[in-house]
Length: 471
Image (cartoon, rainbow, N blue to C red):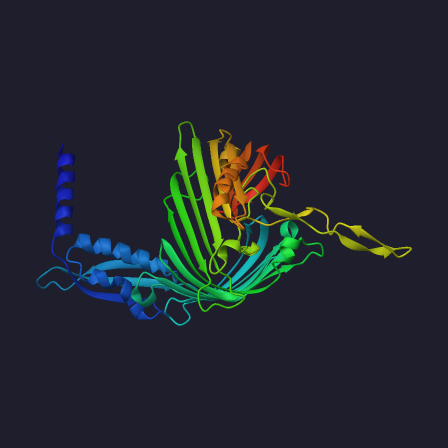
């Protein structure tokens, strides 16, 4: 009883002290080497006007988070010392900082569009003392894709919550196996972003280059350089606790792109592209979890003669593979065109002949202008300690989706296209294992393709894949 009274008395005294008037007498910064002092003081500005200890504590916590977000300090300590004892109680705020090394390097791997890549990044941070980051990035894929990029990023642009970035880039995206072409793209881009949104302007020359001698006529017709000048907007909301598929929460992403910004030229790409993806995970009793993911997208040309125009193959949606539609090979679903046979060189007697161009697919997959997909997965944890240590879960799933071309679409065909989108839907069911890694969630699934179309590339039975972190 006496202990309870003393505890309550302490709580009351503590609350009273927190609410008493308090004056911030001074803010001292220690440990700066390269960083300009105004960069730090800017984050502590609101602390100067705190009028109570409770208010000062809240504002210093916010300031600490903002200093951490600058990613230039390895250690941040904030202390409050008693100020001069004359009149109103006061405090001196002492901020002790340790700066990160200006040079950083990273080597890693990632998986995107069914291609594994090795990447290397060199960062030079805060060299001018304004929390800026200069970065050089290079990546090489196992299917001969490659990326080179230089960028300069400035957080807290002009004291606002915006982050600004400028990039110069050159990329080669290889689609030779599935679609017989390589996409070359060189240009510059400017980005403004907040925690939820990003706006980007991108301009550069892009070329679709058929690289197989027997590339289909549909791919050959896309040959040549084009100017791309586009505005992009990305909205992202994520309430998940982690990127594990069974982690409770929801996520929503919406991408919008308008290409054709600026004066019209003969080789200017003009299209509108919109994609929406939503995901939610619901925890269930007995270590079960239900995961639901849905995605849809649309790309349409615009400008004079848009209804008869054909979108560029590099801007279309592709489907197939563990990350989009299980039970099918990467980009192995949707519109396709037969690869052309090529003349084989004569042998022995010099007689010519006709042969297929390459081993593997006999058709080029062309992607589509309209797509949708959905995934429902019920997962469960295992009682085995080894599997629990790997965070491995078993799952049963249903995956469905479709992608189709809208080239030459008119009002009379709209209903037929809508009906075909649903009737031609591909459906896969299956069971498997999933566990997270640093480069994505690894899935080992046994797939049963319930519905497919004639030229789809099916992967029945065991399918192993890495699902990139995110959706």
